[in-house]
Amino acid sequence: LHTPMFFFLLNLALSDLGMICTTVPKAMHNSLWDTRDISYPGCAAQLFFFLLFIVAELAFLTIMCYDRYVSICKPLHYGTLLGSRACAHMAAAAWASAFLNALMHTANTFSLPLCHGNALGQFFCEVPQILKLSCSHSNFLRELGLIVIIACLAFGCFVFIVFSYVQIFRVVLRIPSEQGRHKAFSTCLPHLAVVSLFFSTAMFAYLKHPSMSSPSLDVAMSLLYSVVPPALNPLIYSLRNQELKAAVWRQMTGCFQKH
Image (cartoon, rainbow, N blue to C red; front, top):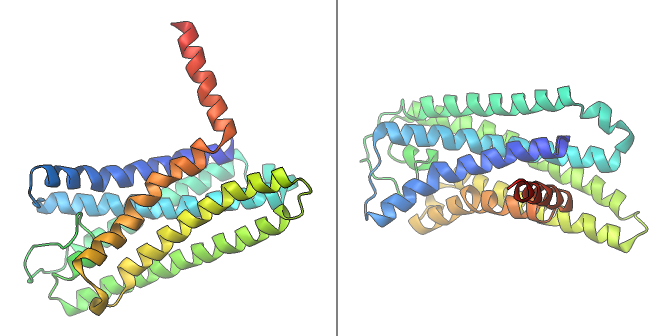
């Protein structure tokens, strides 16, 4: 499993797990105990880690798409473009940019004076919901500007992913074996569907006009980009991957034989 694809898959799994653990346990606790309370430091920590993992998710989805593009469209250059040093640098850049983005947004968001109460219409602390409580016009515009910049970068990543898949599909369609084409499409299409869901719902949640906001719509959109993609990624990347299943099976049978 010491290959670029599985190295990035490990990082994607960490970001998926982080996103789920940041939002779902607290939401379940509040639901079971019939409460909606969260402390101010707890809200800040939740926002920071959520932004950290969601930007890391975006980065690794893009990097993994690049990995698939190089492996299918430029197989002779795979070892050069995706060597161990290049993979480590890309992973470090992804986590560093996610950390800086989370730190910047959290610091700016919680520097806003809140004068419209302290009730969030969401199951976790989210930037758009906190901005609704703000009464500082200048700071609000500053945070909105940061969101627009990140949204433009996210849209650029989405365009890169779509362009890469167009190139991949062009190569796959030339495969003479129908079974080979089916195998490639069965892996690529579900991933592309989850990526599209992740990008579209996240950008809608952060960039929609306030007049389009409603409690049920906000919760639905946040659920679609914060919980559904991390839950589906293991199914797409792990359960459908024969190499990974074979490696896990060898590890399990080896452990049983030792015992």
